[in-house]
Length: 310
Image (cartoon, rainbow, N blue to C red; front, side, top):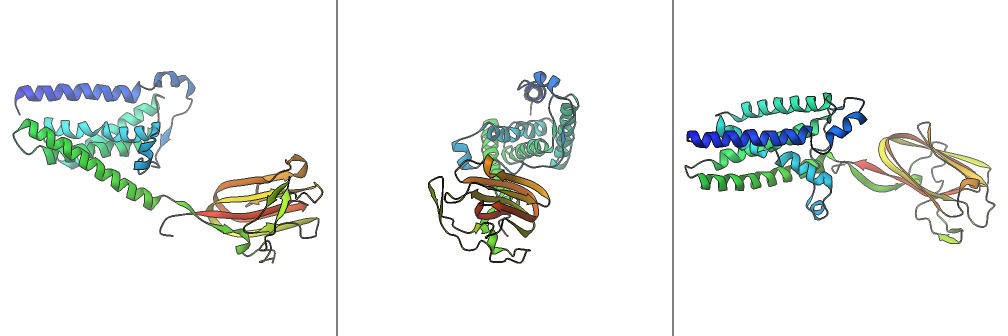
């Protein structure tokens, strides 16, 4: 590399660094948000690194899709420019890069111009690593234009490789809602294992209701309580409720999980039509349902969040 070429690369590196620093500290109206922020924000647990947009997402991209790709792509040039200026190993390069990004993220948080986000650190470093790999693969000849073309192709190939790897890891470590489990399939701790297991049709507000899984009511009493053990699961709990047309509009329902009440619906507060209730619970062990009067619940159940291997 000639002295002239080195000066050009150095100037490009400095200019590009200034652009990146502008986006880190000043762009997107960051100065306007200083007065709105009262606390430092430090996010040390990664939660979105492996959530790069899928091909389907790219057909209808959102702002966050561009941000995730941008956090990687914007730092690829450093992986090419720095090794061109200074001979260095990958370990030394990525160590210094990580240290620099950690310092910048910390300054961003302490100046209230943003937050320290470990997701950004991982994504930015991944971009730099892609650039360094492309430099090693592309800069193999004395022909400048051939080297540029080879480096560009290497960047695309490595980016696709990282994208595919992230998709695999995302699939492995992301939980999805499993099949619907009807509540009557569990054993009721009150000693009623078959309660609610025989669905029957009825009308609410003139609408014909055809339960698929179960129906819960007071079973001829004024009040009934059903308690189930869910086993400390992460799940979506759902149910339908209402008072059939042929019955007096009296009653109420309560739904509590581990002693915390999540739903209370009295007859006088309800519309004369089927009600729907669904809630996500990070941990659910004991489910208690209390029914009074003519209230009925049906298709009560949950979908457990599981990894694909479960």
